[in-house]
Length: 260
Image (cartoon, rainbow, N blue to C red; front, side, top):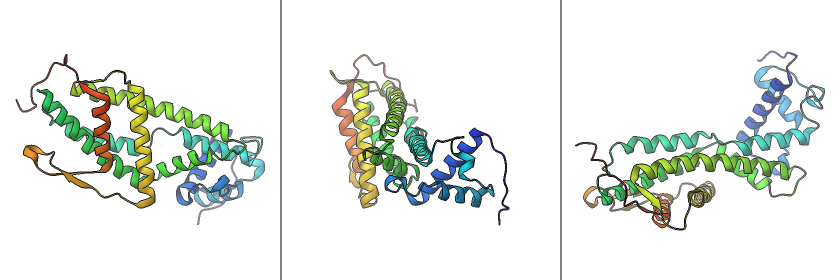
């Protein structure tokens, strides 16, 4: 049993301890309507169970937060701003594993490489979001931000901050993939429009998966010499968006295949 102890923590230490405990609670239980499972009492109990540190209302009220509602809004805002979810890195890792094998010497081979990026990246994204512990929290905060509560505007501002960070991150990565594959945007589309569209598609697909479970995959003759390959519906939709928004750049200088 963890030994109970009273310690004097700094304001920043208290804030970090409480926010970490609050996030663990909602990871285990979800975000209840109005964040009713995030009372000071519940979080204090969680902190004491994990660390042995005893906290009271006097420890945090007016020292870290004005009241319990202020703490709840701070926690929800921290989740809303989160743009370093591990599933993003897992998706990029899956894509990086196939990039070096691409033949980019012709327009046809570049489009084939784009298709394979969509297939592999789409499957990885679907899988990681299906098993993520953080994404459901984030989407729950999105729902709470529409309920008109006292701190709705504060949480919504944090969501906008998180969206801006994610959009910038993916714009940079998509730009790198376009440079690699020799693609450019069709007029009048822009990188921001494409990024918003693909992000919204990803969020909607992930939400559907969390309700129904993993969605059924299918096969397409997209492999070497028309071999059948497994595809997710999300990956196929990604390819359709790329073909709508992008086209081969005629000024691209092809590089020889990796095996030459």
